[in-house]
Image (cartoon, rainbow, N blue to C red; front, side, top):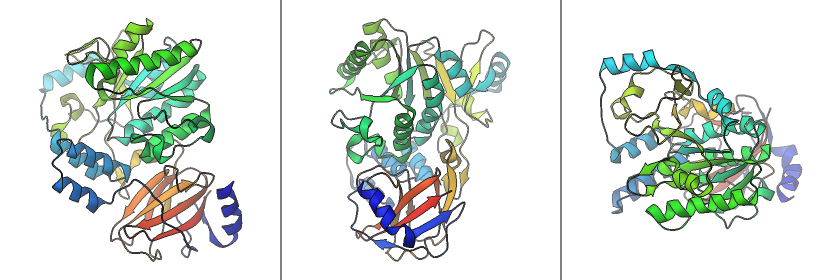
Length: 404
């Protein structure tokens, strides 16, 4: 393998042993620049200021999420999605009396035996949701779930199940590192990944997605399926603008009742006043569900039939300018000294697994270095990595890192 050969050839001069920090004098290798899809912060802002497209704020939020700019992502997303609301203390007190908090992963796994299909949603700008789905994978595999359907996955990537990692052309949202890591984890565990996206909009798209999943189930009806989708595609029951969403159509077509999970309603926003009123009044330390005396999850009062389980994510804590949840799923904090990176700023620092083609694969982590000289912090598992530093002038350097 080309990358393995490069590692063997250079390991003697360019390997750094890392625990929580790097060697102070790493050897750098000049390389040809990578043709990657990531934008620098200033480019994202310029595009936002000059674009007349109605969806420019959500595109900017996606772009920020791709390069690990979490707080900037939240701020830009909320520029367009300002739905402030409040709740009185009586409602909060009643909620606390009626419902008991439980660990969300444990509760979902406890319910998994009773279902053949689990559908969990995400907000496409929120990497935290991918981190949580990743946390479910191993336990659900132990419960018999063998297929993972991803809305973002492109049918054109016919080699992903053999290659075992995502490349830039694998999908749209999967270029975000946490989504790439979700894909890697699923493939490492043994899931078979399949695409189910459909052309069209509205009702036509929901029907098409459901038909594509139905077709996959018909090919292997003896096992279980996990579907990771965006926003309201996970809605069961009636949905005014579409008739039914993908989840409702899938139940209609197959006769199989899915376990539907919502992650998007009770997730932090850029300011407290934009959050769901109940969420504003809860101090959570772990991803949670709230269960009544009958063992059922709290549901949306206005549409209780839409989702079986509502997830409540705790507020993010920023550590070294990185969200604390990037260290979940066996990641370690790895500090990289950038003082001696002799290319102009800003530059992107991108971490790639050493057995993947770093010119094509989705990085496992990305940090943008603007004008600071402080060490940057990656979240990495144990193993060898290629770290690529590349600026807007297409100057690029590479070093090899061993995380122990």
